[in-house]
Image 1: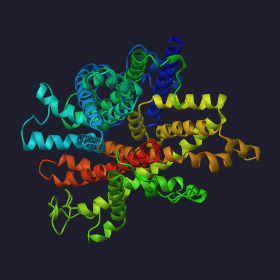
Image 2: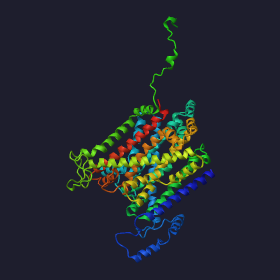
Image 3: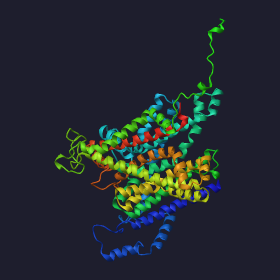
Amino acid sequence: MIKYLTRRLLFMILSLLLIITATFFFMRLAPGNPFTSEKQLPPEIEANLNEHYGLNDPWYVQYGDYLLRIVQWDFGPSFKYKSQTVNDLINEGFPVSLVLGLEAIFIALAVGVTLGIIAALKHNKWQDYLAMIIAVFGISVPSFIMAAFLQYIFAIKLGWFPVARWGTFSQSVLPAIALAAGPTAFIARLTRSSMLEVLSNDYIKTARAKGLGELVITVKHTIRNAILPVVSYMGPLSAGVVTGSFVIEKIFGIPGLGAHFVKSIGNRDYTVIMGVTVFYSIILLVSVLLVDILYGLIDPRIKLAGGKKGE
Amino acid sequence: MQQISKDKFTVVGNSKVEAEKITKPSLSFWKDVFMRFKKNKLAISGLVILIILIIMAIIGPYLTSYNYYQNDLMKANQPPSSEHYFGTDDLGRDMFARIWYGAKISLFIGIAAALIDLAIGVIWGGISGYKGGRTDEVMMRIADVLYGIPYLLLVILLMVVLGQGLATMILAMSITGWINMARIVRGQVLSLKNQEYILASRTLGAGLTRIMGKHLIPNAMGPILVTLTLTVPTAIFTEAFLSYLGLGLTPPLASWGTMANDGIAAMTYYPWRLFFPAMFICLTIFAFNVIGDGIRDALDPRQRK
């Protein structure tokens, strides 16, 4: 376990280092300098700015500084909004995105697992087909299209929910559903196929032979074993929710980190793009690691030390 | 109990010829797979949708007298009519012509990205799995590290740096897109490479390329095909996603993603401008998904009833 963890941590740090290095050099390659704008700056001011942000240093000094600052959890200033740092944006936007994201993850897990269980228990009956058709459609509709349709039908035409903005619970319903749609469908399919596999096992027959009721068998024997693939999907799920939030927050006018990120892409605010990318990468890599550890803890059959992927 | 006299039975006999006779015509593996695929109604409907979309992407532009870039501001934002089958957009461009033009671009992006993933993934995974040992260790660790990088974040980053365009988009998608394919190919190669026929081939002096091309890849074709089919919708999805972030193609190029993005802005008053591109994006992703699922189910003999 310890050996496995150190190994995983090492790879995580390597991945992170790679993405930090990549963002650093990509941003240097990007056209224009951070102060390029319609209004030409006087050369003296530009020289001062370059000096202030250390842009006159050789690249390895800048790179070292950048790494050092990230270790200290400092993602640098925004070049477009002088009074704001990337840390400000994260502190302000991330809590909003987190609430929305957790709400979406909750919906995805609750609805997806339920649909999957129903489909598996009613295998090859109409409930199964219905659940799987819903799931295929859920996978086929990109989140921003889902968001636009939800907004159009439930907010603009029916007026059941607010069109946009953030603050109350009812304002978070549509964005959370839109964000959860794809993952819900995926989880439903995952749960169904894993339930079907478990149901064909001998110990389920044994449980039936013992005279246990269907409910006890389903809850104690089937679901407990079938839920494992869903747990391992939690890592990709959080990645999907994070990237999904970029478009959802933009459509629903939610002041989260995703919306800030999209705005900084539009503004070509390179330090913000860099900072937020690195921040998200850290969050996602850590959550994938946590999920893997959790998986090892709840499934005693997995011996983490010997576990190798793809074999 | 009623007695049944023996003369009611006749001995038919059992001839060796009859017992060995094969009544079912012998099927090659792929014929068998295709037979099972044909029984899957959802997969067949996906295939039909896909064929119609491809045909329309080719002939669609000729079915209307308008082309995809012609502005006509007097006829901006018209609803669907017999003149403009899918209506017009804010510059009065015919949506019908634009949809089929966008079909070409979107399908091209999807298929090109999938083929690049295929090429890199098969070579990387194949070599890694076949060579084994240290080579395998190093190649797979590189893949692991790359795999750790969140896919869409990297694609966004690359699009910001490289600038928008068709080629950069496909490049950005393939930089980490191949890893999944490489892992699947490697897994297949690992399970196949110790089979006798590979040993026989090696004994006869076949080199790496021949063994890979003649034996390993054809035998791993099933899972490769499934992954390939399921990569296309991911690419089309990513294209639409990037377009929505303003990182898509630049005009006059138009894809379904850029059209849907324009449509969302006008959704409240001119819903058809979102409806048509959105519908075709969903239909295409749906078609590829059900075809991929269908092939996977057809390949899995446990599904045989």
